[in-house]
Amino acid sequence: MTSRDEEVLGLGRKLKTTPERSRLMARVRQSGTSAERAVLRLVRSCGFRCAVKAQELPGTPDIVNHDAKWAIFVHGCFWHAHQGCSLWTIPRNNRAFWRRKFRDNRERDERNLKELRKLGYSALVVWACELRRETSLRRRILRFAGRVGNRRQNENRPTDLSAQRTQCRSSVSPGESYRFGASRKYVTRIVRPNGRRTFTSRLYLGKSFSSGIDPSSAYDQAFLRRTEPRLSNRGLPVIRGVDFFSGCGGLSLGTREACLAIGYRFEALLAVDKDPSSLQVYKVNFNPQRAYNCDIRDMVDGPLRGRLTPSETQLLKGLARIDILLAGPPCQGHSDLNNHTRRNDRRNKLYERVGRFAEIAGPKHILIENVPTVVRGHDRAFDTTADLLLALGYRVDAGVVDLCELGVPQRRRRHILVASLTKPVSIKDVMEKYRLAQIRSVAWAIKDLEDEEGSSVFTRSFRHNRENLRRIMYLTTHGVYDLPNRMRPPCHQNGNHSYKSMYGRLKYDEPAQTITSGFGSPGQGRFVHPNQPRTLTPHEAARLQFFPDFFDFSCVKTRTALANMIGNAVPMKPSYVFSLELLT
Image (cartoon, one colour):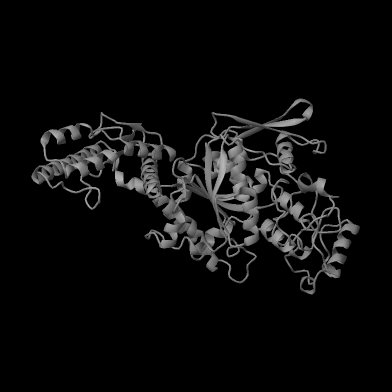
């Protein structure tokens, strides 16, 4: 309700003379009210293009999008008789006149809506009193405009994700290009996420950068070796993000770097994770407005498609516009290495909590990462979440991504779900745009750290018992990469095991195997250093996980905590490339 509505309501009870009432009525604005301007700002801040006062349409909608064919009416609660609202009452004087006036207004509004729908437009009525709850109103606008736009562009779209991917595919052009500068002192990156506008950034190369590599590899290598982060200009437009199951921040790092690449500033609104050490590292590196060390089910505890719970209402208080929601739900319950609760782990249902938050908070874009086997869960948490997002008006795509193809120097395949209220994003198209021709090796990532002085827990290798030290020394002194069965534990000595990579040595000229939290133990995988008689240090594992040297792990004091957060992290490359597409 506008201030004029309040004034009319308040004075209407006191005025008795017709001249006084007439003067008051003449002062009431018919258009451009504060409520209309506030709703217009909300619509535009959600990323939707729109026009105002469409006089050619029935009822002259206050806000309209002709392409998507939707319209919004902003009604003052008094004049349009918002029943049940405390801001609307029938004045005591001349009640018959006011009843007739309000009845005519309601009938006119209903008539305008019917005529508008006959023209193929979808209409939303926003009452002025709803501006008191801006977060709730933003979610309502996002769902309405996103759902209508989605329906207009895909009227016959099937709900099957594979068929949907085929329909939302667009022409593909290279997303990035690189070139060396004069005398190879620097390398320039040119980003073209939407095929039209270009963004450039430059990194200077140190004296020790690898010779003979392509400009793309040189740029990323310089990025990984940077000891100081690039500082964003505070005057840049802001992208606001939420990170669930944040860990130490791999997904947020990718989105922040994408924002820097295309002229935005990333602002972390909220981070949630159960591991206190990982959350502390996230806070040091991203300084979120709010960070919670708890189980997500304690905060987002409502049923899917259910009413807001008190915990959810409290969580949403003060939460500003959310541009992107990032999430990496626990994957241990889906992992093929889990021989106890695989496919039927209670943690698998945590995936659905991301969908529930999207339902109550209405983020513009969503990126969820997990293991490829997430689609096989007995509880069908992935399918339930995807169906919910489709029902909410999101354009959804999902698929498996090989991170080697994006430049991560390890063999790692991840399942990605991407959803957007404003644009379709095809995972296949994004991979075609950003796929690299040259796979990167272990040497590319960590060769310069081979003789690094182990002065801290971050740069020292793990300690090993005598038997494992003997196995490591055998690999390095004999120049072999696989340990013979006779030197393995008794359960591996029959020759029929499938654990060839365990107790193995990495090769400098190949990508690493998937980095896990066991990278400090030779019995957990192929984690023995290519040239040194030791396993990987946390610093080397962080590089292979695509954490640059400026990423601050200094608040972590134990090797175990470092191993868990680095091994469980998500390399930043997938969130980087998908954020480029979503945010432009």
